[in-house]
Length: 297
Image (cartoon, rainbow, N blue to C red; front, top):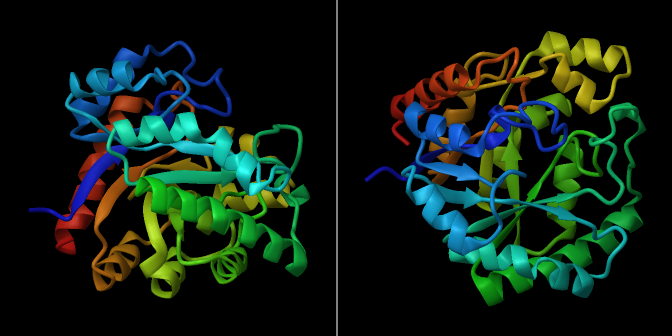
């Protein structure tokens, strides 16, 4: 039995940060095309019903299960206790759907969702602020793991407090072992890092993975022009695995060495008007399953 499963995020069809991208595509189309492309899992999107009694059967009717779901974290402004209280509904949904990991991103002070703010203006924490943050998020992660059996898997993201390889190192160093990582191959590359280094260094703390590819030329042009994250997305900075500049042979070599198990979750924010979702989903499935087979994951 394969140790990996193939999932895709609804972002290929409809964008959570920019609802105008794919806003007119019905959820039904999104789910049926995921299944048609070969995927068996998905993540939450803004169009998904949040009631587990509606969502789980809906996914099942398409041969899909819920792999995980993003939670917008506010620990820079909330206490750990407030954060735990705020995520109870989300926990209920993830548990009902049998999810093993929560994709957690800190958004209270991020710039990635504002099309008018360049990525260069992101907030950078001091060593003291990181320590304080590490304490709080460890309390939240302990609760998730001990009470619910869910791994808090922190999503580093361009335009947030955790963007670079050094940021990831710091996060992992200031937190307890209950804090895991959602490693995103596209975001770490955009942040000037290499996913292979992160897998080699922190492989035992990777709780979830997002596979997106990146066009280096677009990323460099966007950095040079001091653009916002969303403008880079509109310019086509991201694409599906195997169609950009991330070296997936190296990534899968590192994952194989770590004996990675879990979801191979494709996520590529693109404009569906320019990048046909079904076509890109099929390419993504072919490429990601090809790498997994090639490296016997």
